Image (cartoon, rainbow, N blue to C red; front, top):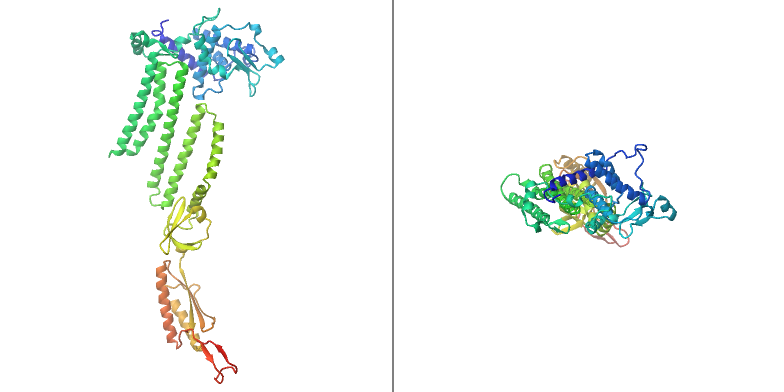
Length: 561
């Protein structure tokens, strides 16, 4: 068969094999009609070799007559391979390449006498767990755990090197009784008729093989990478120009570059499968690379989308909210973005074959170390959330905290800034501020006025009673003094005065207004005192001498108002 002109038929066959292998994981009846639930025998190296070769041969025989039952033997062949370290993203395609390559190798090399290959009895007798085909590195190993414990399959090292083994033996003839699977033809070609004609017209070197890939396929691969790179660069350039222009819909400009990255694998797979038809492993490696690009684009796209939603939420739903609330909303969307990106990264790691369990464990240990290192930062962040939830103070409030008093100027996610009475700014970390005893003076519904009037001791009882009554009436009739809990009382006799307490609440929340009310009350109280015939006491000292009326017989000293 001509390698180029017959490639359309060959590609159809290759695609059919891959499609069948993709479906091979679905439930199907086993070949035994007498015992339909009995699985193929893989109890020893001899049984696994027999099952593998018979399954591949039956699959090709069924395919040649168009029998759709070939998916059952292909599935049986794939289960003879240890595919545990093949990335899930390319597991089905890789298993097809490995199975066909390994068949070609076994059909060409010299195998030992069938009776010399260990069977179940030999395995049980000597406790065999690993067997290598003589004069090769092809190994079969016994499964140690799980549902298939005790069964045998080709080792992961054999699976990984199946293509390498084939390259070493492809020049050898088939053993008697074995027929080829046309793997060479299946690994090259194109479905584009025009491209086939173009390749046929090129010089012979254009169809030569370099590292298992034809020269024209290498050129096509380079062209594919260039086209994909130019497409992403063009999308990014258009996005930047759109964002900096006055055209409508600029919010969507940031989505162009990540969307282009997400579309890269779809175009790349089409080119690989339809135009260049790269050999299996080369195509799988390229597909993994394209998948990495796609997941990077997906993470970027999700991040841009969430941040855009966060900005719109703040702009329309929280436009009149306090700055702290707006900042918290943005932080919530940033955290959601981080979580989404981590989930996408873990998903990408899984499909690319990275052990996610170990990665998560490593992230957990690393996260713990970071959390310990950033303990203060986390404490302040949590303290900021507590301040937002409880709202003991807000911007503009006058408060007392610790030994300081001042007006709150900013409540951030890390610290609170307060301007004190001497006009300095005190910055207190949120973690510390949330633990302080806070007194919010701005939340008072009224302000306390508590004054002491000191009267001269010459004040008579009648004057004092009238004075107390007038002071009480003055306070109750004052328009800016509350009636509740108002009192005017004689509270005691001091060292130089009679003490009268004025206790009331000013109907204001502002300190300047409170000072005005206090001044007015004191002036009226002073007027009432003067009108009552007495006076406010001044600190004085009187010395009594012998012979004075009212003085003791012995010399002494005292004070009187």
